Image (tube, rainbow, N blue to C red; front, side, top):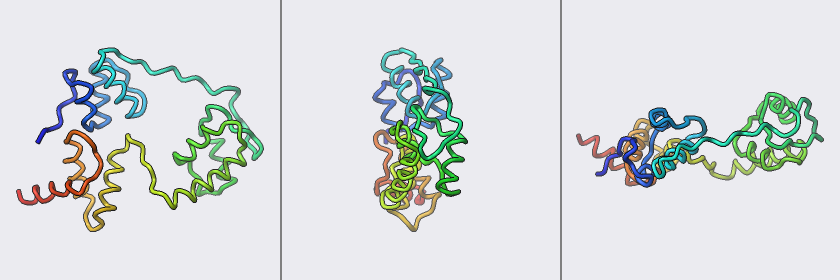
Length: 196
């Protein structure tokens, strides 16, 4: 069985992308090589892959400040601003309108960012629609949360097993090249470990 290589400059981009590395490992490599450590796990992964392929140290694009002045008062008729940032003012508005159950879950944040110019009344309707839809659909977990996806899929297929067993399978799986998605064959590692 091929074991996961340590992250170093001798790896090719392709080798690097075949394996799962923890965020701490990625940031440690970046610090050692003088690369930026800011951004999401997927951004850091892209930065390292580019560096391994070209030797070029990418700098993150400068983020522009939100267009126009900062919003201070929100009503149902207020238009959703471009480059919206979900602030305490936004949270207070939505909690007043939707109730204390409100939270900025990812699908709603994406909706807000994609619908600048619509009203906050539209946003309230969208929140309810997204909530209803999410109850009937399997949640899509972003790629940087591969562990969460694996554990969820493990328990969907193996309801009688424990979290400790799921973690043992995950540790085995992340050490292999290729996909980090749960497969029934991953259970073989439990049998092998229990035999030893």
